[in-house]
Image (cartoon, rainbow, N blue to C red; front, side, top):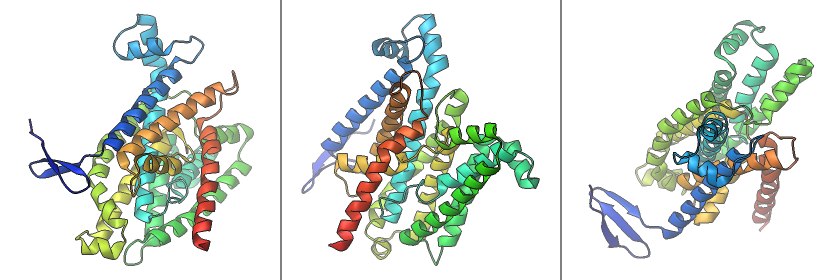
Length: 360
């Protein structure tokens, strides 16, 4: 077991062990603990809702290994996958948003604002409306299934954005402009597909486009879990590069950072997380935009922190799902509608704030 040696440096204490070092930030630890507690309570409240209500203490008891067989079946087999999918999808979207916002040095540069989720949406609606009746592309996407088609759509869109934005490297401002333009084109395709669709197909596509956690099972938990297990460690390993990139490309190169290679790897991680999350639950709006900014303000950092963004995104999505299932009695809303209602005012606030700063 490694022995941690606590040393003080001017301003902030540091924990060092062999070649590793970590700055001790008590505010970060406290806020992270509160966020995890809010996430656990939100999941317990969400799991307890249904035709057979279960109290939060009973839900927590079952999750800790207790409870009778009936409660264990209802919670572990029927209800836990929905909340777990929401938490994992929200966390993945938030981490993807934290990375893209840090790379672009722009709080508006989230995956759903620069077209990544629009690509996944276009592919999914394409499969719902046209199925395998549109040549080789339609046949391939239909054979792959809806989640895999959404994943392919997100990855292809990311490759297009990256290729079109490349000019001896990828710069944040050009990446955002290309993404917004491509998003407008993809949304036009989605709207055209909805116009030509049959009523039943259009209704199904509308539900998917709003981002829904309804009827999510363990088969939806597995893909996003694997994506987080593989991509999240890579995001943490590359996080130190984000600290250099926030000062500009020239400064980052002066610090010895291979800017283009680091930015490409980070974008690949963000695209993978956003695409898998969208494929699992649809394009849940504004989580990738809002969660990293909330996390940054809670911990007081210079850029969105990845770990805190993960917890805030997961808690935000689960709590929004509780609201979506509770606010209108027996009528349940798609969780994406609630996140959009909560996130749209924040987007207006960001636009107004940047407008004031531009005029100053």
